[in-house]
Length: 296
Image 1 (tube, rainbow, N blue to C red):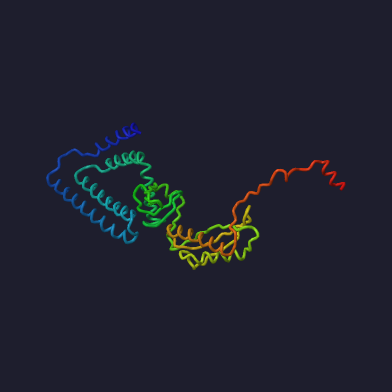
Image 2 (cartoon, rainbow, N blue to C red):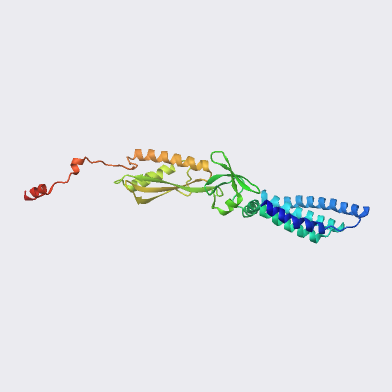
């Protein structure tokens, strides 16, 4: 890569030399160029501030508004710089060619950074999440702290800071856990064979209604799903506030409530069991013994 950069820089510098026009400049030329440069600087800064306020109102506070405002300000500044150089007698055409070649070399060296930078623009414009929301990005779960030019910063459930490259965010499945005020969770419960399923479903429904953090609208629901190896399985669906803390609290309280209701109703929560038989009870009788039994 170093050799490539050195080779690419040789024609770049040659083109930059061709951009300079030999000849003297009067003091008036320098004053006019300096005044125009100062005006360009002031206009670009003012344009950046105006655009940033306008884009912040349109797009919300975030990286996208700042980025677009900077792009507009830089574009205005570059236009003014090129005009100033042209007024000083610098041939802008060869200079643009040199900048284009140099930009290609830099782009190849900073390909990964550019990929993350462009991904940050897409994230901010599409807005799959905003600052403060809790999301699942692949295997990572946390609340969004920031989206900068390279990474999306999350605060994990254990308090750790997680930085996910923006390109990975854009290419992964994004699950926004807190975009809506409530969401649904479920819990699987198995009851022993021989249990009255109507009574068990009623107790599950009552257990969910007794938990304060479980919403009453929509109501919880119970569905029997499978005949297991040692149990008949039911799934109870319930709604709660969308934040992670409430999800964990609702699940814990529901398990406690189900255990209490089942004990009061003498319903057994099934668990895997292994029955062992003594070997002599499973002994296979010999043919002579079977014939004797048949004769009798």
